[in-house]
Image 1 (tube, rainbow, N blue to C red):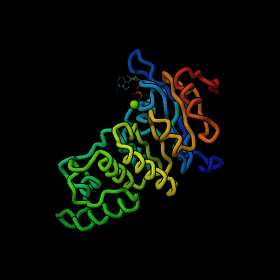
Image 2: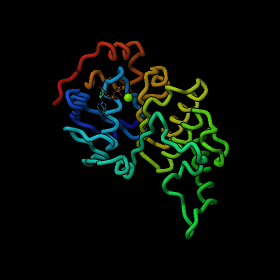
Image 3: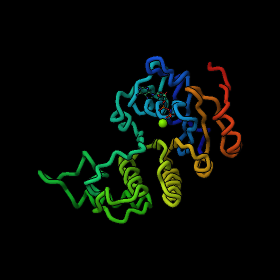
Image 4: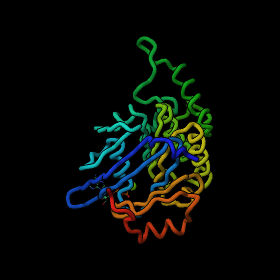
Length: 252
Ligand SMILES: Nc1ncnc2c1ncn2[C@@H]1O[C@H](COP(=O)(O)OP(=O)(O)O)[C@@H](O)[C@H]1O
Ligand SMILES: [Mg+2]
């Protein structure tokens, strides 16, 4: 179990965000603890991706606070949040298909030896990350476009992990995966948890969240309508919150 007696690694308070007339988020609070897996669920357009993009600095909040390890932050880009140990993996993986696995894991920061790319170091370090994750990508020399969706996702996760993050966000990671690939992804998440990496998984598949999650948070039309410990709830109750939840607590 996550150490909820410990201080949260992420705290978002009173987050609001509008896009023109659309109120995407209204006064949303979120806490994430070290080593915890939190499911973030809600119907389409509930504001899940927007909340996570605000956390990484991809979007800018209209109001509210974001604290990392208790310190107020104001990331202006995902590059800045990466520096603070936060990685987000998008549904499209953002990989270069015509490059190989090793090149993708170190995209934009290939190790150098003098004028040249240090290929030996790049591929051995890429291999080490894949082994640490226990994912089933068996060659760092394979072109990414030749891999299945599940293996491409493993590469995207390996790339994220190579930055040694403390927080990993997965936005609908299982939407296009086979049953086997989904199983492997959930195992990878549990492996990261062993390394005390905190994770947020956005998914429509409640069974995945119930398989690996410690907690689940429900957004509905931009409002937080409930949080539950997985052990103390059911898929049925969470579904009810998604469909007809009302904001549970008045914000302080
Ligand atoms: N870049 C954007 N420009 C305009 N509207 C946006 C943008 N991103 C999200 N929205 C709107 O904000 C609301 C929440 O979207 P989103 O966070 O993507 O929801 P979810 O991920 O829960 O499906 C939706 O109404 C969506 O259309
Ligand atoms: Mg989304």
